[in-house]
Image (cartoon, rainbow, N blue to C red; front, side, top):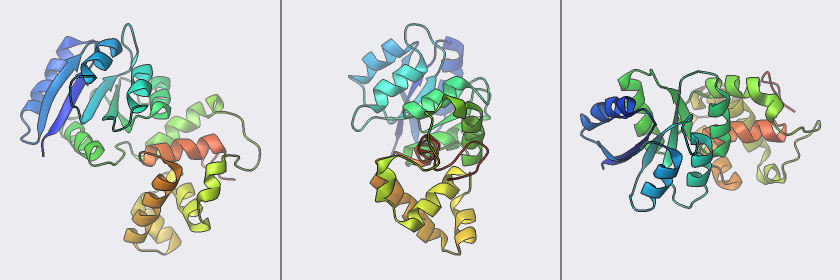
Length: 224
């Protein structure tokens, strides 16, 4: 299956560079480009896209608002944010808006290609630990919560699922969670899938964001 990619960035040279890298892949095709968010939304109305590589700082409509509008639609393409700085408030906002992850613009080509394939397959592409550092920094921007999580959706989770969610949000991989809880990795993967389904989340990144928003996990990695 060919992965249909859209490049959204106001720098033509950057789009050209990424486009050359993607064009050399037998399983990828650049099907659309846009120089700002307004143009991107317009193009998406008539073009089928699987993964959008999205810049955050653009004229007319920035990448955060564009991501939010894209992800609000059913069967929306996955959005991978491209940012200049590792801990960028724009990247934080984009994750909350529904992006499946973020990459640095100077990422090695091999990592970018792996990220696109990962996003297309339904996985998040930022390491959970990186996401946690991002959220730790911007946790003051999240709604204040009391000692106990208030998000009623968390009540849908079993005790074991809540344990797994905490460890996902603390940056552990499936293998590390399996070792911590003395479970098989396949069982952990099943629990993560159920968490995503019950809470209506797209990927692990959104699990981390929700864990912070509800107070299940707090800045610094602690949990309630």
